[in-house]
Length: 192
Ligand code: G4P
Ligand code: NA
Ligand code: NA
Image 1: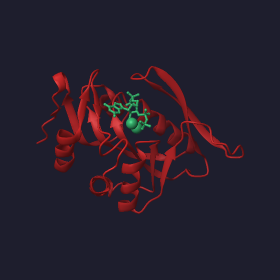
Image 2: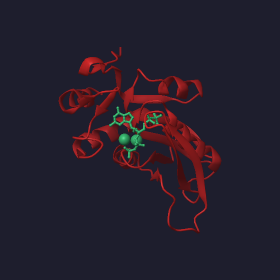
Image 3: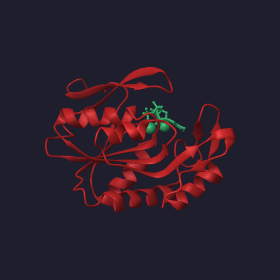
């Protein structure tokens, strides 16, 4: 997605350790005009998959997921990282390990929002090692829902997440694919 790549070049900053800071438009301050176009792009890509729900994870996945939900006309559910205070909810829970942060954390979704027969589009802001997306897919599986695909705003293609998800049989569509962040320079994978 050209506009996204331009915005990443203009507003993104490379931190050490292969981390891209995009807090000017995605992970802290949000550019709603760009986010709306991101939502439309996800609709274009996944409109023939029969998607009934979108699932993401708090916090930075929520903005692109909501705009995708708006474009596609389906509800958006975000997995929570802390246990909900309402104890009467039946929670689907799984553990996600972050290689970046070197911590495991539980994520959960109330089982009232996902059911057998749902076709879920998983959306997230970043794809690095793929563990968040795998955790979300596990929650869908626990609910008996199918994963229709995985939509990513920014893929760090120099990490192994994409390969892992493809290997598991998922359709992965990333709106920007970063080949390298070497020496502070952002290089994208050239698509046909
Ligand atoms: P993985 O799910 O692909 O395995 O990723 P990883 O554990 O490496 O990422 C942990 C967190 O860091 C995730 O956010 C992820 O979105 C974010 N992240 C990964 N790479 C980058 C990057 O280059 N830049 C930025 N800005 N974020 C990155 P989180 O901590 O779970 O949550 P939140 O920030 O959405 O609240
Ligand atoms: Na995220
Ligand atoms: Na994030």
